[in-house]
Amino acid sequence: MRLSQDVMDGPLPTTSGASLSGGAMIAATLPAPSALAARWRLDKNLVFLNFGSYGGCPDEVLAAHDEYRARVERDPVRFFKVDLERLLDGVREKVAPFVGCRPQDVAPIRNATIALATIFFATHFRPGDEVVTNNHEYSSGTNELTRMASRTGLRVVTAEVPFPISDPGEAVDAIIGAITPRTRLVVMSHVTSCTSLVMPVERVIAECQRRGIDILIDGAHAPGQVDLNIARLNPTYYVGSFHKWMCAPKGTGFLWVRPDRQAAVRSAMLSSRASKVRDDRALFLRDFDYMGTDDYTGMLCVPYAIDAMAKMIPGGWEEIRRRNRALVLEAREAVCGMAGLRPGCPDSMVGSMVSLSLPEADASLSGRATAYDDPLQDALLEKHRVQVPIWRLGEGTAENPGVRIIRLSAQLYNSIEQYRYLGEALVKELNSERALKQTG
Ligand SMILES: Cc1ncc(COP(=O)(O)O)c(C=O)c1O
Image (cartoon, rainbow, N blue to C red):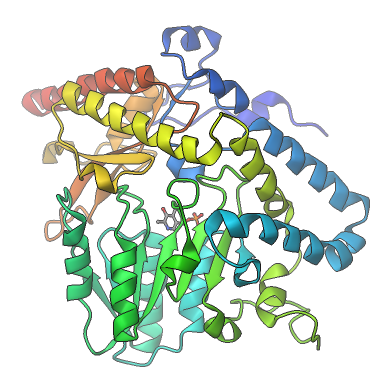
């Protein structure tokens, strides 16, 4: 049975109860994206400014994905038992130069969340061991660490990196300053999620190497956004995503482990193949190349994503990174100017995203409903058709109020007019929050 388009699209839930199934007439009133938007399948009735959360696949990558799925169904037994390993070796050959490592050191894994947990599970923490994270880390990693702490007695030490930040050295000082003789592992993002900071990972890695402390870099946002060379950085572990800034299908991440540690890093769940005796292939690859029946076809499309994007504009990936960065810096200037906001970091910490601190809504408005993290996001979407994340660095509690943040992403399909439109919408919505406070 084929699902009708209505069922597949569904009525979008809104906090106001209104329907978001807009129709073509809305698109005409919205600012146009760039001409390259034709290569993606985004909703034309949206001003889509959040590439960072889930990436996005150009059409030709989706087409390759369909072909691979059809191939699996033609003979699943051959696909899983014979073809898969060889195909994944091909993927490795292509991604290794892109992320700067040897093919045999990179393992496919569904996403950064699983990759982070895999490293935590592979580390035999003892009571009193300390893991240094910081207040900008993504919650999937810190949630797993908190659970580990309750099971093993490890202590999670959270370094406080300021935001806004005026110099990358402030991040280095905060993280290195949290290391003690009990530190077993340092975990830090290459590009932070909520605050979009390109972190000075090379300086922290060098310091950890000097002190003989393991370091795990969470690079979920890095490949495709920054020029990456993992082997040159040489941390102990590096996890990343292909499905964000490399534009591959969803559910494609990777795990890089320094060669001397690979034998000790097993997958969190062992597959039916784990006990097979084989001397033709490293255990590291066997473990991660097959983790049970699953859809591995997205991973097989990563090379297509690398090529599709490289060919999209003259200058390839280098030019993509340059253009996205230039656009997001221009967008930051426009939005800051219109809404009276200030940049959250120096230009040297900007990749393809920027985050800005927003004024807080009055406490009397705290009960407002949201389908996201902040009702302002709902308002921007429902009233202005802008999809942009508003969230918080910190917990929003009395002890840890944190900072309310808007994050802008720039991808080839965006245009500067879209951010100016956001600026206008943001001013209106911040003003209406103030008005509600005054009358409320
Ligand atoms: C820094 C960082 N780490 C980890 C993750 C988790 O990635 P995934 O959802 O692909 O597992 C994200 C997601 O946005 C992230 O921004």
